[in-house]
Length: 177
Image (cartoon, rainbow, N blue to C red):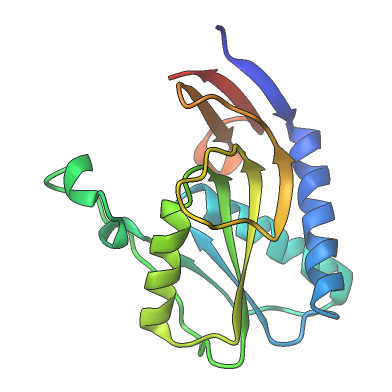
């Protein structure tokens, strides 16, 4: 199977518009919200959501990014020398509703690791999850609150989110692993 585009740049932008508005609606505005993107794609998407909420609500939310490499339950299987990026959360999480942002949710293990990492920074009032693509096949009972697109991808298929911030053009592609 050749790579198939399942979201164009316009589709991504429309999905992020909708997710941003759903976040505002569900939380009755942006008061006491904070955005945290998971490295790498989630950081770029969180920045875009941050900008959209700022445009709609004229507020600047606290935002940060999180590297969950050492929190993964399989990090030692991936590499003996994992590449650890910098996490930056320079605001208090207490009394905040944290919107955790990632590009794709698959098994749920990345999100579990991210929640563990967030708890090392403090105890937020709640954590909500926003993802661009939900590809199914969960191994843990973790579900996103906000989803750009759901796709039924087989375990031997890959969902890749390509973003201009990482030198690509904006699209989501489905291909064989």
